[in-house]
Length: 228
Ligand SMILES: *[C@@H]1O[C@H](CO)[C@@H](O)[C@H](O)[C@H]1NC(C)=O
Ligand SMILES: *[C@@H]1O[C@H](CO)[C@@H](O)[C@H](O)[C@H]1NC(C)=O
Image (cartoon, rainbow, N blue to C red; front, side, top):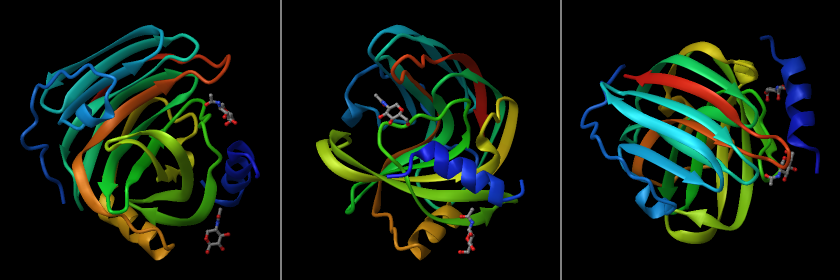
């Protein structure tokens, strides 16, 4: 299997470079290792060792500071009702090491974990990604990948399921001051066109800062992101 890095490097060389306010944002502060309890309008989850600190600050804003040790990682972000909608984000994403700034959610029937990746410093996923196609949304070019997770944590406990990743072509090293507009319907429709449908939305979607260690690659950074 061709590694993700190879695929993306190749792909990057080939491609040139209706707003709903987040209603019902709730100040949940779940800190749990259980994916089943992660699905709230605010998610804050860590695993393994490291210093992780994230807070929701109201108005769709959250801030994180992280420094992960081997095996350590975190996910935090503001959520809102999942669906076909446009989500805007703006702020500072100062990440070093593995992780990404992305919109993230789940569907059931089929069980799918989906990501729309807007920024990263080092991308080092646990499974190989397979390129399925590319498309344009809101002025950005995206590559669509899938990955299979076998017996991994899900919102329904340990399961085997597919991950969908829309990856903004200029997401690599898109750190520092960031902003953008994500029209989720464009992504869902593109995935479907490539033969990868989503199921029924399960819980919320989130604009998350995700950071994780991969071997000797350790994540550090800060982020302050507001979604609207
Ligand atoms: C994007 O899709 C078009 C049409 O299918 C294809 O010709 C092109 O090679 C693709 N580009 C990348 C980077 O995958
Ligand atoms: C680390 O990243 C590499 C390259 O993407 C991948 O092959 C490996 O499985 C990753 N390891 C972990 C523990 O995620």
